[in-house]
Amino acid sequence: MKTLIVILFATAAMLAGGKDPVPPPQPPKIKVGLIVSTTGALATFGSDTKNGVDLAVQEINKAGGIGGQEIEIVFKDCASKPEDAESAAQILTTKKKVVACIGCVASGLTLAAAPVFQKAEVPLISPTATNPTVTQQGKMIFRGCFMDDFQGEGIAVYATSDMKAKTAAIISNQDDPYSIGLAKFFKDKFTELGGKVVSEQNYRFDADDYETQLKAIRAAAPDVVFAPVYYNDLLVIARQAKELEYAPKLLGCDGWESRQLLAEDAVGVEGAVFADHFCAGHGDEADAFVTAYKKKYNEDPSSLAALGYDTVCMLVAALADAGSTEGEKIARSLGALKDFNGVTGRKIRMGAERSPEKPLIMVKIEKGEFAFVREVTYDEVRPPEQK
Image (cartoon, rainbow, N blue to C red; front, side, top):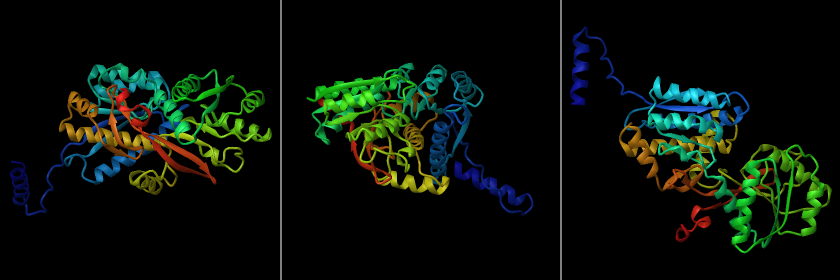
């Protein structure tokens, strides 16, 4: 039937005046929403994520789209504000009629938008929202990143299996739920694996002197020091440790990811290892992504860019599997996703809580570069027999 329509269309054009045949009509594009912050406090995170999304869509459309239909991204900047995220969700579901949406970057923003998508029965998949309550908003809400409980547990597995650590110290920010949560998850798993936490030190949000905490840790002589903090605090902690002539084996989290750790004035971090979502060198997909990203944007991709890229590819895989743009069918296919090889890990599968079961990427600071160490797989951290 489709072939007949094309023939009749071309014939009619020729009979109309002998002009060149009018090309056949293109199939409609598949509208996918994107809500990230490209302005406001989270602008850097949102811009990186959008770059990854745009690159993935460009590649997918160049390869023929989904069954010949191209993806069209309908973008809304939520300006790092929950109320704007909710407003963007309303526009995308009612006026723009997107079939699915990617966003938001932060958990708080995603939580503001999620009820709107759930009510409209439009799947929403967040590249980076780690808060467990995000996917609890309903069966239409998914995420593309691992959560902090898994991250803390995975770091403890790495500490015991690869670093052969039997004792550990923890230094954390007592005013930061992210830091406190990771500290607890690490401690519980490290203890379960037979390790012992010999010193727990914390500091207030506005601290700039860690000498007291570092001296207490040094006196406890741990095998490793876990610092579930952001990179700006880590840089000061590492520098002050060096000033005290103390060289601990530092172990960290995805909050460390920053090129500032590679700067010439960053001291005390050489050889430190941290968990992240992405690092070049951990597979063909990752290396191809780095090459394509640098060609398009003339800079190295961050883990947020990688997560944005993978989230698009996961959604497209679900759309292709569903063979439909109906929300229920897309959500069903997303929930059944397995053996997905992405730039943030291999053999990724969607878990029961609509969160991916995927690896940690362990990264080492080595000679002014981020070097891939290895993947800590989901099954290493949570063996199937324990589920």
